[in-house]
Length: 206
Image (cartoon, rainbow, N blue to C red; front, side):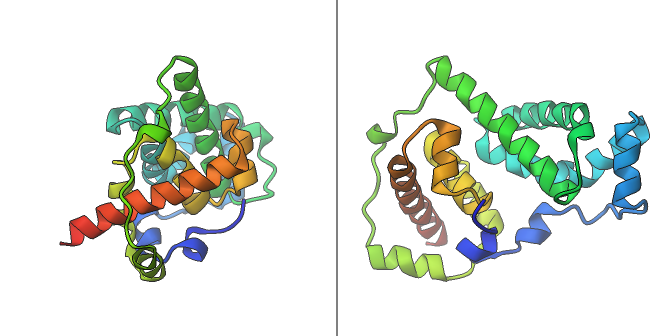
């Protein structure tokens, strides 16, 4: 994975938006993980309370709609608790859960592709904004909530590549492997998704 959102886009309010402020961790992370590995329901409930808010936003970036995002969140946490024994502490618990959630979302997308629901990316009409204008927008601080709201309006394919690369820090090589596409296709879809997204942000600012 190639970086944090702040290293790629200047997103204002990112941490405030994604991290739940009302819950304070009282147990150490190690104790919480150990309790989850032992199957303690109270510990699982605590983990859900701590991270469900952020993970719902993550799922929304890959989902068809809010109800689908909730389904992905539910299925994702089932996988988290089924596989918590595999957690080795090489990253934070939050990072590990995020990876499980992303993988769960990508698995759902791949199932939709097999069912014939794949978005035909090349048929989407992409606006042709001034490249200098796009570069300027990239350099300016962007409100994270506005970006996430505009992102949910993008076609699924564009949204997936943009989310993986810009927000979840995957490289084009990793995206290509995950989605069974070429690195060139990943780069092309990212470029197009940015143009659409920035056009939406520009229109919203008018």
